[in-house]
Length: 315
View 1 (cartoon, rainbow, N blue to C red):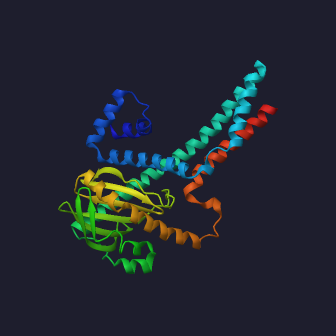
View 2 (cartoon, rainbow, N blue to C red):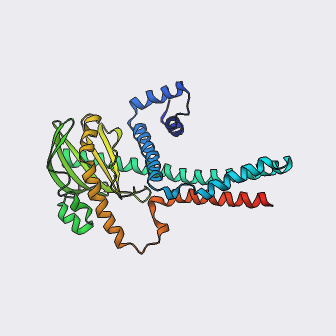
View 3 (spheres, one colour):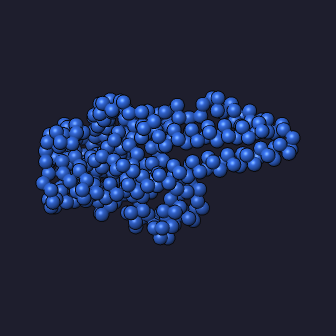
């Protein structure tokens, strides 16, 4: 099975909709292809993020009125004469097509977001290799304090979080260096650990414009493994408008243990900074909230489709 085949079936694979034989073929491919593993991990993280967004935002779910209208329309259609039911089924099919178009639009944007996240992960690995291991960046790193003055308070968080010594389930990690550096045109806050006998990097960078920022708040993040990229293990989690990566030549499970050990304080520190910045932009219309824009659009699309359906049935 080739990479193209795996990516075409990736969403069906995650939804457990494929035959057992096909699943085995995909799993065999993933064992030898870090690019497809990273792509699949990004898709899984996106699905989990959307699920968490709905769980944290009940206002995006269907309203009781909407559910009642659906039940009423279906009940009335069942009781109506056969000719009218046939017409209703036609309008119902049209409404379903409208909803499908909305969903496909969101899915198309989600696919772009997955690609953007994978590109950032590769840049994080490149920064780890060229900064923490080989010291061959084209631009000299600067202190986090200087980066905070130039680029924002996010960098100040990394001056004290994580602590210099971190205890993980796989053993201790000690901070060797904290700075801000640039790789491939992208700026990172960079913390270098000595962990499991190897240099391991914690890298924080802003989301690309095409990627979805996660909602801030006091919710413990979940670190997601992206497999190995360029022979390095990679683990990541979103933190408000930033993306956090851990990269190093250690076992993925060990890297996940380090990420889980520092995730909560780092997540809260970054989210607090971004919440303050968001308060300064409070004059921005609510409709521009990037975190809820797509799912709100789906909800509105559903409501509009049902309005259209209801009007059609009345006619």
